Image: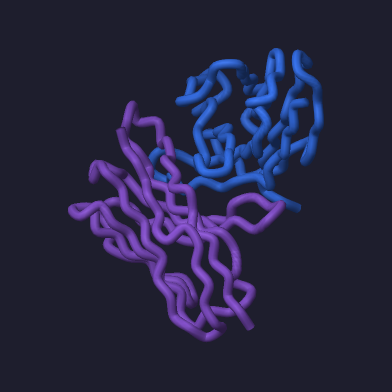
Length: 114
Length: 113
């Protein structure tokens, strides 16, 4: 059974710092990996999608990498800003039954201090 | 306007009541999903639908049912609500197996007393 773990559960950094969020998964047979941002009282916003054949994706100050063989993904945020404060969720697309089922981690709560 | 909308946004109900949560999308996607989010457990899949004639159970479907009224509408029902169904419920869509990025609605916060 696929399990997704995100470490750390919470992170506080000063504004301007570069930071890395980690995601690990137990079964390398995934078809994609998606990073989301969740703000209080709001839904999930898709940040980056990495297909299983890709190694990384970039959007603005965000860069996500994928290493299927080691079961790891990282989300790199450059020059963090207070507006980046949110919960970041990692989800892997599981092949079981071709369902496009996403298996979620429990998230990293990020606080960027001004 | 949001691409994926959910109604209501908040609901308080009593044990034993039947309630329906609704999801609508304007993205033109065939695939729709219902998830619930509980603190410390992440999001878990309840039901999913690949088109209007296709309904499938997810990992935690007991106590729930769904209806796919049209390509754009996917409703989740709690037949007889119980307190441990108190959670944040999300609807999501995706275009196809190949175009598989999922897009989420704003969520419905449900409290069962």
